[in-house]
Image (tube, rainbow over all chains, first blue to last red):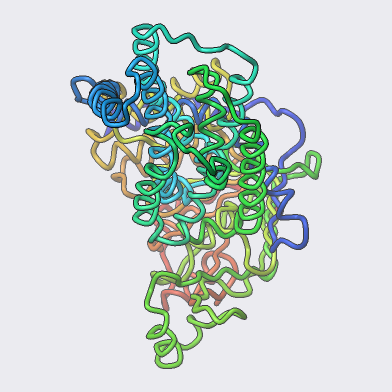
Amino acid sequence: MDTLQASHPSGPILPEPSGPEPVLHLEPEHGFACFRHAWHDFMEGLTLGKLACTLSWLDIKQRYRGSLLGPFWLTLSATIMVAAMGLLYSYLMHMDVHIYLPFLTISLVIWMFVSGLMTESCTTFNTAASMIHAARLPYSLHIIRSTVRNWMVCAHNVPVVVVVFLWFHTTPHWTWALLAALVVWGVDSFFLTLFLAILGARFRDIPPIMASILQILFFVTPVIWAPELMSVGEEWLLLDPFFPLIEILRGPLTGDHLSVMVWPAALLWSALLGVITCTLFARIRARLAYWV
Amino acid sequence: MPVSGRVWLIGYNVLPQITVQNLDVSFPLYHGNTRSLRKTVRGAFQGRFSQDRRNRVVVQALQNISFTLKPGDRLGLVGRNGAGKTTLLRALAGIYEPVAGSVTIHGTIGTLLDPMLGMNNVLTGRENIHLRGMLAGLTKPQITRVEEDVEAFAQLGSFMDLPVNTYSSGMVVRLSFGLATAIMPDVLLMDEWFMAGDAAFRQHARSRLENLVSKADILVLSSHMSTVVAEWCNRLIWLEDGHIKMDGPTQTVLTAYLGHPVELKNPDQPLPNVAP
């Protein structure tokens, strides 16, 4: 008790004033104000990007604290899955293992990222509820945190891809298309997380629905089978949004020939996702704190 | 530099001020059994439950709240459990945006609503300080100053480098209170949790908070404890069922709220002078 009173706190830190006093004016949104506020939310989220990345990294550290291999369990399970499925399916589908295994590896790594992202994004706002209720923060901060975390987890599987590619002498085609595809994936992963996080905050049935949708998509989308196996009707696959998106990333890496319509379809699906998500977010941003 | 709520800028160097006009906040009840809820609404609970224009069942948490706070005001919120105190604090912090009416806050906002704000249980006290500094947009040297300041205040000793989940609740309170008051906001919004500390801590916290308030900032404090609000506040709002039942000087409202006059705990320690 005495020690407490004997201390002399040096007093609060007054951050140097930078610009004008902030003014927070809140009232029910009319007209396009909601889109302006949603835009502000994104911009504020980006300025806190470094914090979001730190939080993501701490999430991973926390998740694997005390674990022997930590996140490298994912690397190990990806390796085993690739080895087992690669040998079995190349035999079943009568494909050359030298072609099939690199294809399967990159496909599975991409799919693990997609399914991890979609599973976790449903609960992004619900797990951040205590933070949302404690202070006014941009909602995009939580989305960036979740998205970056999934990219970090995905990065642990990259060694598997590198090893398999070296083993089978597959040389990726380093074209600008690969870079463009990565940019599209970066943007899409953010919007997909935001979209599912909103749905998950409002409807608690989304996580189990998502689990079954993912299972169906895994078999319907050319993940473990090459799209060239379809003799006719390959263009119907473009109706599955994941096919063109996976194809633009996988094509340059495995050196497969891309069918012409893949890029337009990928951009179209991405634009659709972006527009729907932004509209939805603008409409419900002010209500999110009430939902979680 | 905002601590939380980095918001669109429309004014220049205005004194800290809070204006609340006809604020309504209502919660939709999505996840309950709506049909039986509607029956309940028609039955016993009148006033608090209602249906909005889309026929959803909502709880009216706050109705028609209006007040203005100027620099130096130290507002206390009193009322029963569920009267809407915490909801009002959250509405002032910009967490719950108004369903009707408006809230305008000039100045940076500091929130002490949840002792664990942004704190990660498995990280050490020191790591948490760094996180909060980043959240406030501080530079590296500023974060170091905050760290020294909080270390001096919280008196955690070697616990600073241990995970927060090894702390006692009092230690968590000391850390988060020190942290929240280390980065100076213009408007400090505080829930009653910080009273979880022992008497020595309250004394300690008081000197630190007075330091903050004396710099012409606004404090809004919600508490159950009449002694606490009598000691800290110069104006009280008595909330009942989401309405303002009474708004006035501390002594007047507290006498009406408790039904008997209150003795100030420290009559020799008068309230610091505040700007009119």
